[in-house]
Length: 116
Image (cartoon, rainbow, N blue to C red; front, side):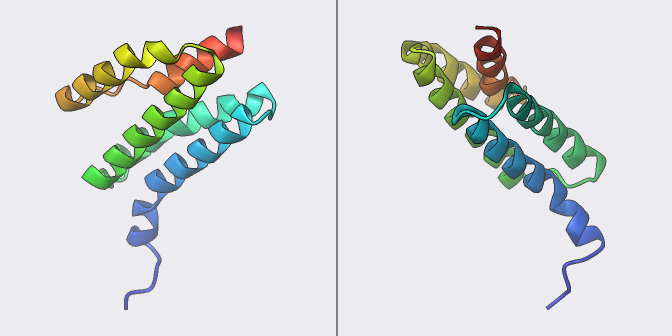
């Protein structure tokens, strides 16, 4: 077994950022200060950037990030009493993903919630 170091450790950075962004977003949804939610959004932006810069982009990482975005967007839509919005948002995110575009419904809803 190869030790977890060097290039292998760097390849884990994007998924670790996705995980951290997910945890921070959930913490914000549970009542943490808005800065925690903002840090979650920053992690959401940095995970894809780091994956490309480190040559660590993968189908798993892309799907993981997208799944976190959709689930967090669903929770936020429910909290904002805007659940019907998901009837438009989720298919739009699926379409964007198939086209290779990264449009985060989580980001849009979080920014909207922070402004309310």
